[in-house]
Length: 118
Image (tube, rainbow, N blue to C red; front, side):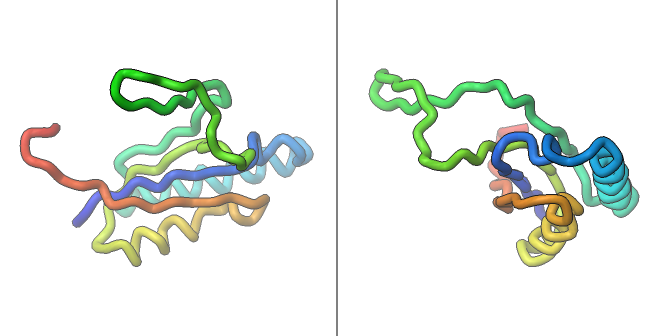
């Protein structure tokens, strides 16, 4: 079993434009999705991020404040999962019900296991 990080990007709060009933239904769908991952033993952790944060670039002791990308997308949360391979991790990411309510970009990355860390 390998570990993967699923990084979720949207243009700000993807639920902000939905009516309260739709927001509640979405939260319930996400809860069921997370519950299924927990029951299957695939979920190691998941959390949304606050909208507030910082972005900077640096090198050789010099830092520049951001943001730097031209997109309005921000990383709004993550899922730390286990899967047999990248294909299974992508399938898990695509099953997220957030795609039913709006547009999102998802990045699935393999967590590199290195000796002496954790």
